Length: 234
Image (cartoon, rainbow, N blue to C red; front, side, top):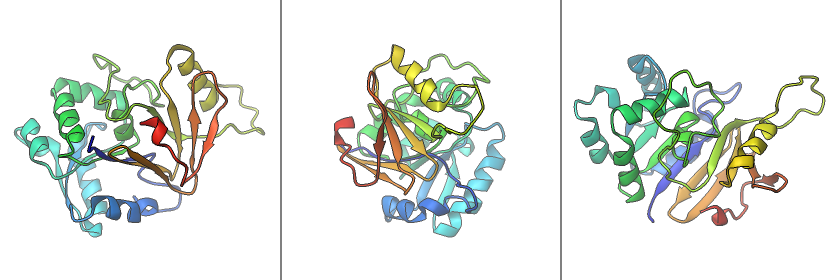
């Protein structure tokens, strides 16, 4: 399988400009590809979202075309040199992709190796088998929780570790992922802010100093750090 994916926990970390924390990873991943097709469907105002992405990525040398501006969106995906699925509300994003019948087109192009895929937050959720480990609220109702299934594991973006000093009595992120594994066997990677995953064929690498946590059904969470061998997840 010749898929190429860059899956970001977030597009911005505290105190830094947009994508500044992963600028070098982006430039290395995209190489000579500088034409990106942006998917703005995780937000309501497509034009405003696309303008913000252009404003931040064009100084890095990228040229951004928004999918909402394309008359034939399936053809635009098939002809794109690279695709960037932005963050926002994952339920809205998935519902819109279903409504426009774009899920099979994106999946086919990415898995064939013809279309490198970059996702941030909700866009990273879309690369997973399902939507079940997202953090956001179901503000709309997609016809299914099934997503693109470009990788065989789930991602929990913006992962936050339990705070031992907190007096908040609500569920931690770890609690919620444990509940997921009461009903599902799929591995989950909790991506902390500033962490990202790169998939090249059957190789996978973790980047970013904050690292991640791996959740497996029936096991204690395991810490992941850059350089760890994660091929077993593929």
